[in-house]
Each structure stands twice: as structure tokens, then as C-alpha cells.
Length: 162
Image (cartoon, rainbow, N blue to C red; front, side, top):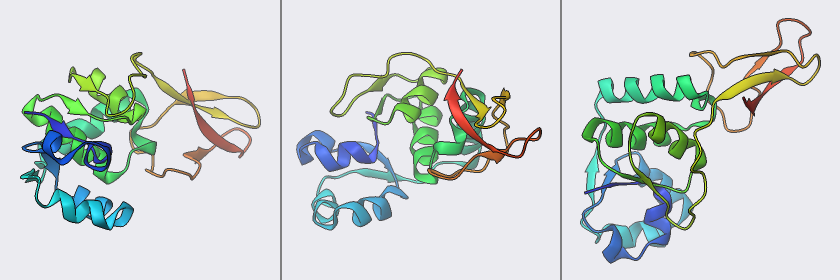
């Protein structure tokens, strides 16, 4: 048994996905990315689950510790929560998901890649005055927006590996 990220659903043969644990929230993501593949995955006998709130909270806490939380989507957190809650290997090519899973002690396997074996800690660095600080636990989640503005000079702060 293993938890499959959307990359596995998109790229693996149906037979290889069969019986995998996936988050219900991935259905919409899969449909948006590839409608035909979404219909094909309906025949894969996947184990669709909704993560429990304590597992989601734990996933958020660990992602906050590594500094990955601002760049993880709700679907990413659902997938992480399922793997953490059931202590199952996680199949993904997403480096941020891999980073959080490793911090949680969850085995990680790639879909198409093997990279990303190091554990990272992210920090915020101001693009103006270069001030650095920890990523706050309440940082907003967004794939593109700035995490926050610098308290010293008001410039955007960007995520950087610490």
C-alpha cells in the first residue's frame, strides 16, 4: 500500500496505480489537468480518502517547520496527511512534498525523477535589505505570491533555502 500524488496518476500505467491511496481532492485536480486521464483513473480501483483533521494539522505543522507551507496547495497537504496518518510510502515528484514527507519520517519514491534526497529548511529573505527570518507558521499558501513584506524596508520577502 502507498499514497499516490497526482503525478503518479498522470504518468504511471493504470495497473501500477491500482489500489493506491489517493485524496478525494485530487479528483478535481486530475480532471482539470487531463480529463481523459481522469476518466481512465476511474477504472483503476483507487482507494479515494478524505484525510482526518488531526492528520491535516500534523501535515501543516511539519510543512511549517520545514518552511514549505507557503508553497503547498491544499491538495498537497491532503496527500501528505494521508501518508502521515497511515505511515505509508508517498509517491511524488514534488520536491516540497518530498521534503515534508522526509521530515515526517515517511518513505518517499519518485514517479519520474529520483532527485531531491536532501532535507531542506526554507527561510524568508528580503529582496531589498536582505534581512532573513523564519517562515511563520501562519504564512499564506500561494504558489506565486510573495509570502510577506519585510518589516524593515517593506520589500517582498522570498523563500530561499536556508
